[in-house]
Length: 300
Image (cartoon, rainbow, N blue to C red; front, side, top):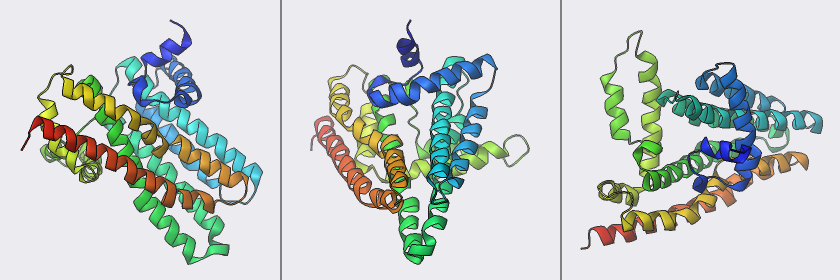
């Protein structure tokens, strides 16, 4: 196999990845994964390194100095390569765990937290309390909901297309039961701790998707080649590029552009306006699709 084919073999599905991701993030991530496999490094260790590097990038966004900012950009790109490498390494080695998945999703939120803090400190002298309010709204409401919804829709697409085994579509009820079955002892406390937060994350995804929650049990009973599942896949596919915009690449591209022109407030406003409008639009289309197909499966 050539390099592209080897990279594709470590990806969940080409349908939820853009060409930009394939060549700019997944391919370097694959090369890092090969390196870490050679060193026998566990995927979770790679995730933890990505958290540290991505968080450190925020420090370099604080000064109004382009040289510092460029270092921060490089660190964030490096962290994202590791964020890709951990999942690819897990699939290459078979070392796939729930805690790894949870930490992988958590990594981006940690990066964002430190980046928001850095931008807040940078803009506070000029903006004062206004930037604190804008950043709080952008980070705690817009950013978290946008990324959670995009991640959920990508996993739904994989679940419909490839089945449960090839997706990471969890339910809050299942994870709640798993959490409650664990004890606060030396062996199980950490898993119980992260499941406590993962349950709430999954529940927030479910609250944003009421129509899908109604159709999911109906789809679950259908084989992968059922025409309804195939129609769902076909109409869900055009939404995947929108989900990619809501996650990392476009978001960080705007962040970098705003730093290059010396106006980091552009990034905050972009999240609050453009990405939030896109979240509403994507959610509306997906919920409409679920409602339409649910009527076919259970006509009134």
